[in-house]
Length: 220
Length: 342
Image (cartoon, rainbow over all chains, first blue to last red; front, side, top):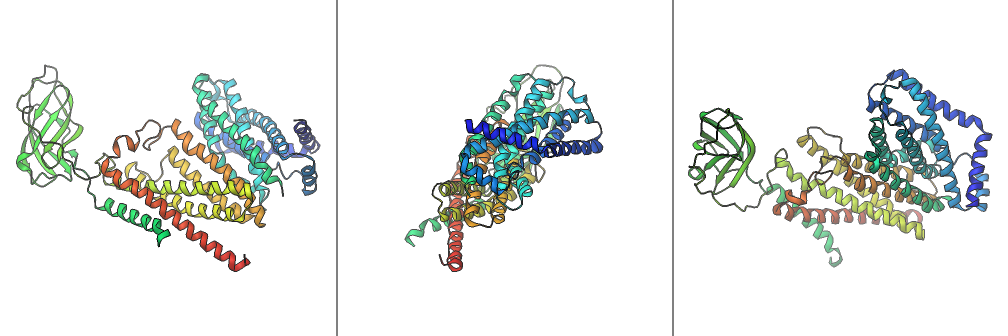
């Protein structure tokens, strides 16, 4: 447990020391949103608004989480390998990615609303919607962290990441879209109970699998 | 020979199922009528049926309209061939507007019916029941070996025998791959890795066959090659996941590392696949039988004739799939022997 916090603190330190990387991600998200704005202008259709937002978040997630294992060069990994337990390594990476993506997602929402209009948000349950965004950030980064660990073992990291990640992330995306469509329509929480439950089950399965499988990836 | 019996069994079952499927006729049924509205007075229309024996049962043909309130007996005017019959009804003046089901009965085909075939168009008034028809005897149900006649599906029901076993076989092979990947992570034996890869390769072929047979079927019954349906999306995701698995394998050069990375991905992917294919469709609307409220084949559509062909087909295809897998395995092992002198 102690190990986990130390590793997490180190991840955050490494990120704050390289501020340009974080700003790069923010800029990437902003550019994506601006391109969407140029091609769609104001969006009035709720389904398209919702779908587009999730696609933007998905790309941001691939960009942010995809680099969780190439941040350090081989020498550092060897050092970490001798010191830390692999389960602590993967859990710290997942936790860090969740925090990073949660921030990025909220930022993306603000920029998205700014450019593509608030027409859709009238009558929406905003608290429910934002809880959905955070849950989504959790689900996406948890699933993609292990995939990123797999992809980095092949030569072509980012390409492999997309290839392996997209089909794996499908169930999460389907549930998230239906959840946030309900939240945008202003449905009561009860309507989304099933989506929430499914989301928790999938997230739980993903974290457990990462916890069990990562040690096999780690020992090289 | 003695230890290869299951290969012959598989071949025999698949041959039996395919031939029987193609030879078995569909049960008779009524397709349509040439009029859907009847006015009061003497009315005539033609009934178009499918696989019936009107010609030979000309004298025993009984056609009547039935709704909750009334039964109207028709007079068969003309039978031009086995599937066309012209029938005349005397619709009473005073009768409520109702939708009536059309019944056709004869000794060869049993009782057939077309729900909501015609509406009897007339205004208010009490129903007056003609007594003539209800008292005439109808012939017994006919027990013939045939596939059920279902609206919009018709002859394509035979595709069930080809389409569904593909998915069973694929699941069986992907299951083998999953277990072999688990074994590999446990023992790090190279043979488990080879088995995992080969079963995915054969499974993927069955996945493609399942997608194509399904696509052809969807074009006929739902009107498009691809429709939005959780089952179809799941099938596509399955294809993508395992194709990605094969690409991943080919992009890692070092053998033991490749085996480990691929096994981790395989296990992760299989669990997500189970969520996508088994859990999610239960909660979503689906066109497929047995999902999201639509009844499963087993409940009533899969009748006894279909059953006697369907289960052998599933078992036969699984055996054949496994046979292809063992052949690929032998080939790979021989190649490795020649190349690396293992």
